Image (cartoon, rainbow, N blue to C red; front, top):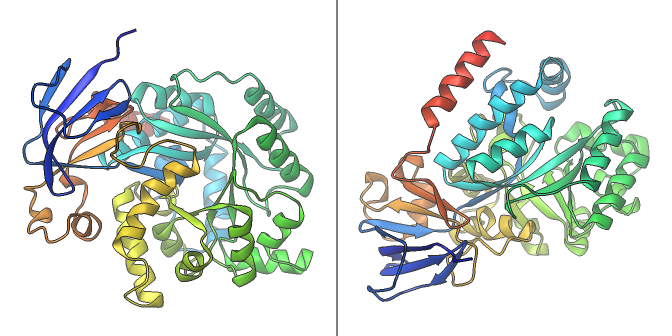
Length: 413
């Protein structure tokens, strides 16, 4: 079967203007000749290309709860507001919430997200339709009906990706305070045997850590290590309250940490141990968390806050621009075994095209510096995922209909 060939002409890459050929879903040739045959040629004069974002921790349909509960600590926020609201949600809520989340992520340069929520078949359908990538989580919690837990495991057994490679599943035991030892270990065993990721919250709040020490005599990281859960297929979200020994365990076991700076700040969860993570060689990626605790899904904003928080807490030299950019792109892709996160021949063709004439990108002493510290989503001209445009010249197909449907649904639910 012939693969579609897309030629991006005169696009800026690392300060040079090049022609970039995309064949199928891969970057096929950098610095291609002007007369390279292609099915479509796009003039990219005035645009620069960078890797797209990979959101390592999200609850996509929580767009439904944007601004619903603010200004309170995690446990009060969860117990008194979020979980009671979620108990009222129906399938159509998850559908409309996922559409809005995907639209927002695309418009802000994200092509992949690692999701932990409910009614996953709806989310899978939306992701497939919107042309994104995702790891869709089978959420496990003790208070879910036993039938729902078993249905999740059965869903994994019968899984077939409708997208042709853009969607994967993950198993998501929510956290040590909502999942028993038996269920957590079962989730870990099933994830390993099926070659999927294990995604969970870890050491997010001081209360979580104190309660764990009181109950088990050790930190949440040490407890999961003792249970044999931790390994290179694990994505641990937040990981704020950790000591040197905890971080060494995470490094030694190959866990990827999903850092969520905006959510951590909004919930007052504490200060991420940037310097310690870097010193021990932990792979860190970046996530937005859900819209109820952020309250947006902009990975560009997360990069900036991650860098500024690190400098505020540990000194101006901590978390330099190249590192935080890697966290938001390359590390997120690697964590989910995606051959992406770079604009290089043979890599998956995921990218953002940035307007170099946008006022936030001028002057340009260092392009990535501008991208992290001064840019916002207004600088994004187009977004490519898997070799095709999912946003072109600021427009996503169906975007006005998505917003109108969502607003109508919220008013009438």
